[in-house]
Image: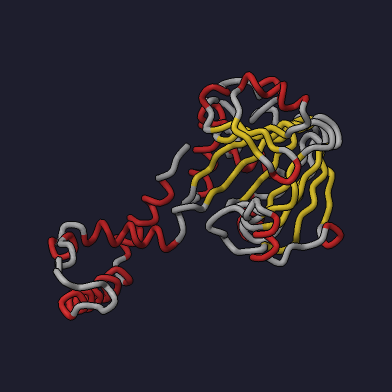
Length: 298
């Protein structure tokens, strides 16, 4: 009899249990897990960084101040020599093993959003300046060492987008913490750092560093998105919902025409009834949930 393999996410999180991860850390507060240098070899090694780079979503060279440029695989060495940190997005698109792992983790956690991988190759002294991301960022340190600074609480819960790159805009829209207000940790091979979406963070490589980022992206997978999709499926067969609003000549748009107001209010009443029905329709709610966790696969 063959030995049953532990779930993918369980191997990555060990010795923290998946149950404790979901109940106490995931999407809630930062988590640091120390591990042996070879812990993530089954997921990704330094030798695999160069594989499938022609099929990934994007490769960016990131300089100080979050200045970025999209580059080709052939440009990576030159950008590293110029002092840039290289970010490869959608690494799972170029490596079937990572695609299988991403889909396995999504399935094991029943995660409604997208699960994907990013790789960060950073020469000493480079990294990313202070910012936050619109996703849960789980860093697996593969090679070298990198120091991280991060906040205890998010700047914004489940942000719809990453923080603005422009420093003036960033400081105008958010209360940006000082570096001394942040926690700090040095990651070495085998270490993991998981940060909730919206968490302020900054990173600097101490040596040539390679990190794999396991990203949980909630974009277009929030409760609102799931319910809107469920409502669409419920209502799309009704011509009254497909019918456009009436065309009216000679109206400048400054005042709501009575004909339009009447239709909108009638449809809103109908929508309230549909929502009330759905609230007690366990089968419909289950379909909405199942569809959300089965969609957005890598």
